[in-house]
Length: 601
Image (tube, rainbow, N blue to C red; front, side, top):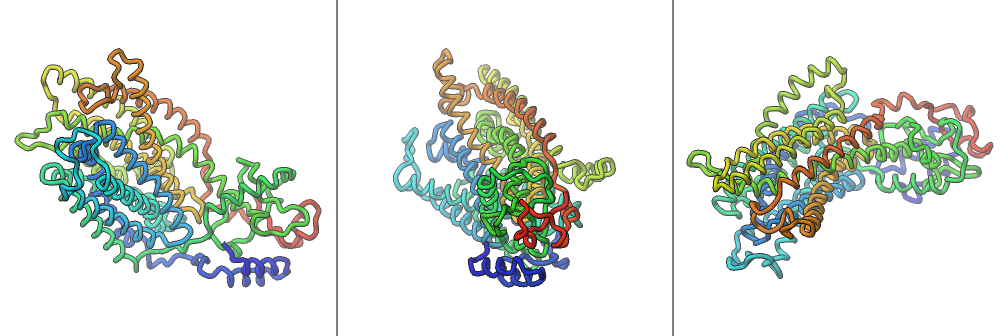
């Protein structure tokens, strides 16, 4: 934001007939907040993003391995019961993705995305060190004779402090890293490369996660838990070291005005101007020129949706254009873009609630199945390697075969639109939950005959959902980045993780509510998901409940996806400055003639 002295200097020049003088005074006050000119073409591209891919792979090794195995760590080491173990994991994951908003906000406002990643990376490494220490020290474990609710005192403080730091560090990195990678590509000139980057982003995470859920999980469950955490710590440290080494190759964006403040300004000014008459034409709304803008390299053309917000861009009678008095059309449209995104965000939450089950109850299912592959016993948390292997094969096929083929038909740089890609993922998530319920019924029927079915029956639900995740996660990341206003790229990209956060939190709520309700109405007076023994539970009914809910949610998504209007790729071409002596007056006030700049629709 401008300092007071700068604002006075700028607005004192606002009515000067020489626009160049206005621009000069504005540039002098911008200082470090002034965004750079055209990106250095010698930097960026896939050379720069390769360092980011290495970090993603190494960080995902530990993150995903801990994500899928931690439910067993809580059960067998920390002596949590079934529901508490599942809820602790889902609450941790939800907090991680929710905290990505902090990383996104900081990297848009105060620090570069590169610096934000390094700072939160240091927090993540510290958390992994603390978890390694606790897993190693027997004094920080509950007694073997303890059955449940044994974690308290310093033991509880160590556990939850390390989890909170891990959530903060991992979340902050995820809030800034996707936008840092996408910044390496010019959206207009490298649209195809941008779509390829997000597919590479997913592939790097998948390859790292594949190693994590096999090698690291095997070490954790068969050797010692502290060895698994230690390997995760080393891999994460090396990943951030590689990210730091790549600094000379990055296109680094300078932070600008606070996106939160800009949003609040529009809402406050629109409320203050609520009694003003709605302009008959968008040309009567306030805008400044491209060169005068201090926060972005692009303008956004006026749209007719949410017209009540347009009142924030009305320059009233006897008023001067200043902050908290009037907003530009671009600033108003930024809020409109974010508002249009919200229904899409909320429509993907249920899918991520389904994802949480594959990392909690499905792992517990696997621990009660026949896990032998010949003489080798497969760790139950390693089952997610099945969808990861599918994705490792399908992502290159999607990028190198499907996208070029679809591009010839649709003329879209990514083959299909981002919202179409998300829709495919939502349909597959419904199928995955239905299949999960069927497999659980078969497993329980065989258990009653003293037969354990093979662990690989779970591969059906994992494989289908893995493909769903490939479509939805990449589609959302690209959607939120491309549609976001220029000064809100990181914050907007964090919406993808926000959907994951809400999904994990909703999973915990569903578990508690369904347990409470079914405990009252079931003849056995036991909830669907009670106790430690999954064979005595009704997990299949919970899966089918999620499948039905996902069907309803998909219908809701179709409505909002068809309602959504994509932001134009070249809004600046629709915005023209008129000569000052040709600008219509607002409310007939000649004093505003030299300060009002219009936008053409």
